[in-house]
Amino acid sequence: MAKTRVIIVDDSALIRQVLTAIINSTPDLEVIATAPNPLIAREKIRELNPDVITLDIEMPEMNGLDFLEKIMTLKPTPVLMISSLTEQGGELALRALALGAVDFITKPVLSVEQGMKDYAELICEKLRAVACAKVQRLRTEPLPQAPLAPLAPTDRPRNLALPTTEKIIAVGASTGGTEAIQAFLLGLPPTSPGILITQHMPERFTRTFAERLDRTTALSVVEASDHQRILPGHVYIAPGHSHLMLKRSGAQYLTALSDAPLVNRHRPSVDVLFQSVAEHAGANALGVLLTGMGKDGAAGLLAMRQAGAHTIAQDEDTCVIFGMPREAILLGAAQETLPLRKIAPQVLKHLK
Image (cartoon, rainbow, N blue to C red; front, side, top):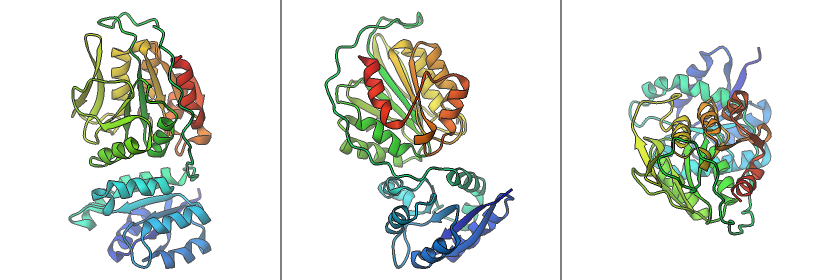
């Protein structure tokens, strides 16, 4: 079996050494070159044509974001950002993803060598996934945002406490999801129903992500807190430290946060969100599962469909990683499988 070929770009000799040892210890990955700066890396990438590049942000000669932009413009290649700056600078991490990086890992702040070794399994897992990713940059324009027509009542599951026709949109995503979520929200008007989103993302990044979406879309976007009234035109992003759930108070929908154990190795988990929406909103909900690695969200989307919700999965051609949508499709959880650009219009059509 052919190995996944990796080039490491990092100005730290220690990081290059530790990463090389980690990657070369696995039978399906190999480091074919390392570089201390982008100028040297550029020649090695041109000569060796790697499957994956690992890239730091802060480097001499040229910073990693400028180099990433050149890579994705001249020779698009799957890139995994590995940087200490992404831990404290969520905006830099989001900028890297917007430029075309597939995913990122934060370097430990203390005891870097041991910390990187502790990350060994995660690093190799992400490299495998990144190698399979589609590295096209998303270029989206806001879709026409006509006001929504009044929403008609739908049949509701019998387990709802009080009758309500209020709609809820629940969205889940992982690898590649930051750009996919933005593209989806750009297609929705400020009259949309309340939207709950779980995106796999480290703590401290989710607030920056919410602020970015709030600036760039027609919706009001916040990092979710506990016991918020869910309002039309508002988006609630699961914080990186807690599961986000839907709950009911009479005929009103509210947010709920939980620090319960990881589900599918994640907190926040898409399955936790979707299961709660299935229980409390039933046929008044729409479920959307976007790009991501693994299977989180598949079982929850099935629960939503069985509860009467309309469910949509992103198609393979437009996913960065098709793992989560594929698992949902295999379970029969998705009523529709659509390219990313068509999901928001279909949601609006269904709401009307």
